[in-house]
Image (cartoon, rainbow over all chains, first blue to last red; front, top):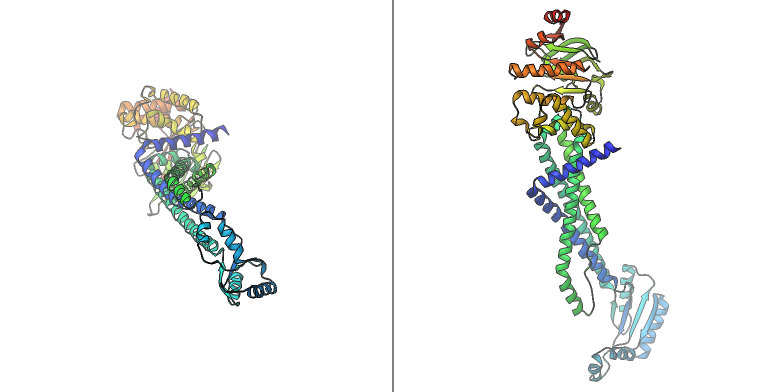
Length: 299
Length: 229
């Protein structure tokens, strides 16, 4: 057990020594790995923030029916009875007077409304359909639009739906990007380890001749690659945090202009650890492939 | 300790380096393998160290048949040997001490104990004062002694050397000879491939003479004379 521990400690020390021995190489490799991991991570953070923006928005699907301005009490009664018959869901009638009253309570609107010769608002119905499948919603909206004295039918949360689809596409793009850059990271590590093995051919050959197991020879390379990957992951987290900081002020300003307050959400400590772990595993994988291919040719 | 029976080694190019070679070496023996260059000395060295496998026949070391050994078992077999190569295979980017530490790192000896043992091995070959030197700064004889220190630091049961005096002057060769004699005297089985006639007259080894890949075993007359006095 203590032998096992000592050998792993020695491999780790060896890996650290190699990282420190060629600082320029190390910095360049870390930059490549760091940037490769930064792009998908930044994409993920942006998506996460966008999702946060829409979380506040109502996810309840509503359909609004606006009557024509000349619709009489009789006409709205007709719509009411049709709604009752259709069993589309629960609904609420908002008469034009009530809508006007509600608008008057909104700051700055009272004067404008007072100056109007007559109520410009129509009677309206707000329906919360029982079936919220997008296809059924579309069908309902079409049916409503065909009823008499209906001026306009609006699917209130259609934009949330669209935005959701947009987010899903974004997620797919980020996933593909992550896959690509993961591949790049493995390739970069593969090559780094290949060069190291070539440079240490003599040492590896001698070690094999005097009784080194394959595991003994592989270990320092695995540690090196895993360490490099983990550091690259941390660098990526740092870059994303820096980017978030730069964006925080403009985003807050934008949010204020829209009358809300929104703070950019960065990476949590857990996310950072996950990123380092991902870099570590990918580095290890690159080393494993490289070592398996290249060590067989020595000794 | 080492037993070869009907060993044949044929290289892909068709060269038959060893033909039907059989011999036994018991524990604590000192054996020289001699013969002209191209007689198969180095091939036999490589077969004994499991660097190459025989085409036919079997070699048994410490009860293990090398021909049937799995690849993953070879490193552990090699740890029974102290190997001294014709081209020494020193690591020129590492200090003398670090070269000797390598076999101990491989078996996972704790650093403190490893350094203690490496220094003891360097002391035995007279290189203790040069532990921080890089091998390139050593003379030919010193490099050979460093190779020996690395071979014995693990206290192997068998010392296996391929032409250890090939490129040395007479004085250096005599130093190396004394070192081998000392290890043999403490019970290490010593097998040396050499064509150095001087050695044969000064030590009393058993000699396996190879000729065109075949073995002719006999005792050196001069050595027998020496042993009887």
